[in-house]
Length: 174
Image 1 (cartoon, rainbow, N blue to C red):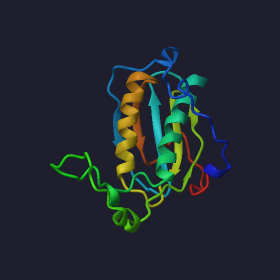
Image 2: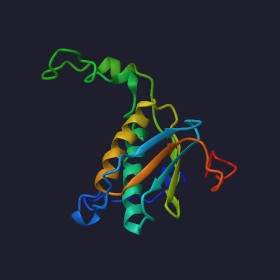
Image 3: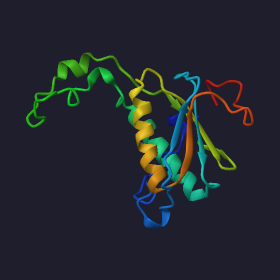
């Protein structure tokens, strides 16, 4: 389902897992595995330590939706990382090059499906469009902390399919 067609949700501090009652994370390190990656039709799979509650699914959806929205707005564009590459200079009073940001290739996500779950497994489909692989690093970094503090995730599989949970045949429009 297209993000434009999805209900926009109001992300509260509780929805982002800031409430102590929602803190059911795991001290075990999240394992990440990359499989066949098609950035225009990407399934991301999550095996949780426990069967997710409705609150767990809402939190996971909030994380993925937030990540998607930053990508939809072009936030994962490695052609315009000026602050990161300022080098040994201090970032204070840095001169931001607006011409560089304007001339950088547009790198935006295109679409996101709904978070689905089956037992301890969850999955979500994305079309990362022209965004850079930086987006996947940002997602993994966020999920590591999310798993530690909110909803324990045993493993995250990026790409590919699970034989015991078929994906729709028309992956371009789940």
